[in-house]
Length: 238
Image 1: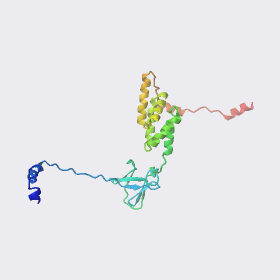
Image 2: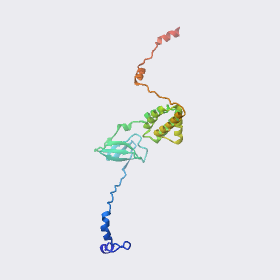
Image 3: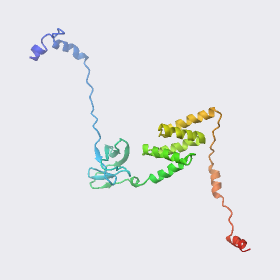
Image 4: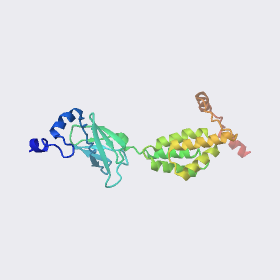
């Protein structure tokens, strides 16, 4: 039927036999490109002790990964390593794959509580601003918005504020709070805009001079004069 009717009889529209047209068309056909299905990376539940069970072994995760029931991570294997990502696809840990069974593979850095150091850094940056309380609230919001990159954000802000005067700094902080700008790069861009405006109006920006290492060393070597406590006792008696 295919040879006699479907391909052998003239088509009602083209008036051509399909088998004759096939001989012409097959030289112009293009190969269909292969399609690769990207399968999602398998997910695993995070245990309360911030670890994940993978193929008969426990692997440690950074402190604070566990956010309660329903916390999952994804695992990808590459070149003998486990690449562990959080629910947002951000890499949070890597481990060498263990071929043993029943082992606990731990990274000691995962157990460190880094929040205190980050608190100190945040306070150090806040005191640079004229309104320290407002700056602290702003930095805390950055910490909440970018928890994994908060330290880099704080360091960048601390570095860039050295070139600003107090007025530019406060205008920048006010603008970022009002407009919801919680990025160190964007903070710097806003600050540069205010600095240029003030310079155009004739305001000179203060130059922050770094203390040289030689001067620093001399300061540390200075020993202040001290008095004998017996001298004060003689004065009191007289």
